Length: 307
Image (cartoon, rainbow, N blue to C red; front, side, top):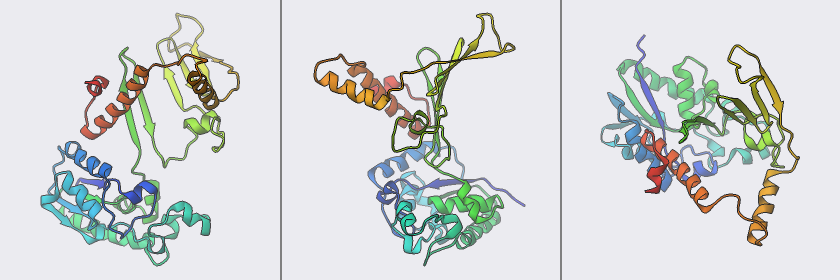
């Protein structure tokens, strides 16, 4: 059996995707940010050798395809349309759960819309066409359908599309002193490894005492926010020697409250700022550099954003 290489691309941002509203057959256009992201795909897909380009009939998918530079050769495939959400079209998951507690799209489907099996049947027809073509194909569609397509491509039931996510990102940062950092981000992964739940600082999140940051150097490592320091007992220690852990006890105050109180003191002239305007500008420049690196698929120096 032939296994051609298939590249899946989710459409750019729309007003409904931004607000979390289920967008199936409603033809919602891309936002300006969505159009910008679509244009940025051109560089990321530059090396893709596709014998065919297929797109969902929705304008959000077609325009993403065109702005990425593949519109001229694109073929519209009706079976690539997003999941038909029926009565849940335009409704957020939070709103659905108010009237139907425990509802899960991939398990329960949508009233007057599609079930996972229905969407899976369309995915199977696409896969049959891919097998027959037996060549690399670039596909533009929407999140839930692409997750079902990925599951069926792997021989899994369509309900297992729930196990795939399309929003996870990683960022690698190299500091001026030579240190390297890796940041992993996802809004769909189930884990306690994020600051708001791990630190117990935000009252509207349950406290899960785990670490969300790990800093490691040649002398020691620090886990945050549990504040454990790991080091060798002596300076001569190496990887065959056991590590010892030292816990740093904090005063128990809340970081958010401390920040706000300090901000008020600075405004009232009672305290000096802990960071400068330049520090703030460098933070913004770092965020912009990360965004450009994602769009252009290359390493971007923070200094580029300051020019």
